[in-house]
Image 1 (cartoon, rainbow, N blue to C red):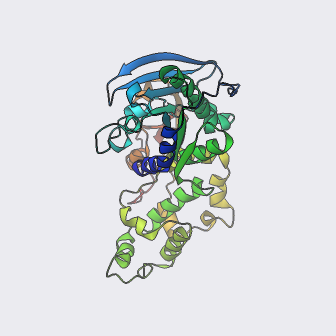
Image 2: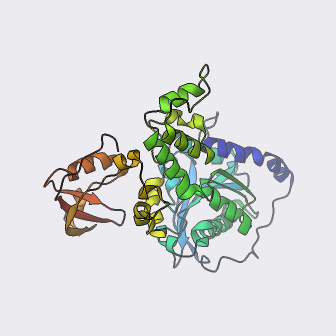
Image 3: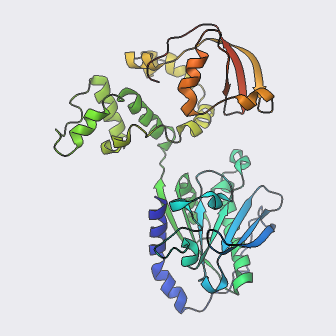
Length: 378
């Protein structure tokens, strides 16, 4: 997906490249006002590196903030007056490109010549931490586009110092949540000259898309082979034929929500997607739902079908101690979605003590008071 997005970005600027080469270099826009929050940039690393391709690495940030950036400049003889900037779905490391390999390697992304994407295009690469996770509780324009825009503008200042007077053309791209940020940045600032958003989310993406997928995985887990067989060449074409009423309703619902039926070919490994990461935020936004679902008429849980009752896990425990992330016990606490079945089996054996690490970086040590039947499938 990243390969396609970057290829699209390169093709979209091909015509502009010829025009740029025939024009005199633009003067740097020194009159452009800086963002009032990010107007004191600093550099703490400036060095040449040889991997994945030769480049000049510049790292820094903006004083008084947690915003950080990394720039990757090509040698002067390769530079052609432009930069690429990748936007992440959520604030993350400004050194993300250094950790990527293969098709995800944005510095040394190999084309047929084996030369890095940015340098073969005569460009430098820009990335930021979007202000760090600490800004998520505040002004959403900061991680949305202000940090990225400020870094883009300051990169032009450094490029002018390195390569002479000009205004570098900037091209931004991002997927999923990064697609939202790409669009908002392009619409609300003039920091970039071109943009490509891909795998764009929708207002229904959180939580509907992920929960609809999980609903189908729970109810249709044994019927996907027959569903796919019906749609394969030579099949009946009726994917509902072998389903009971609940299964038919479920498949029809997720299909109407936009999930392509042929996409279930990967049902064994498709998993919950980003839902485990987003769940904490969803719970905070609508905490009452998790009680109302089982009690308020109109919700499925208030009159649950047998399949839902079989899937529900209830376990009575006694909280013995709250363990914070800094306590020694927390170091051995295990978490993660992949460990869920093992954790449930452990916690439901009488008098079996175990630990659970919660997203809030706290662990609760508990002991079982009563065993509960464990479903064959979770």
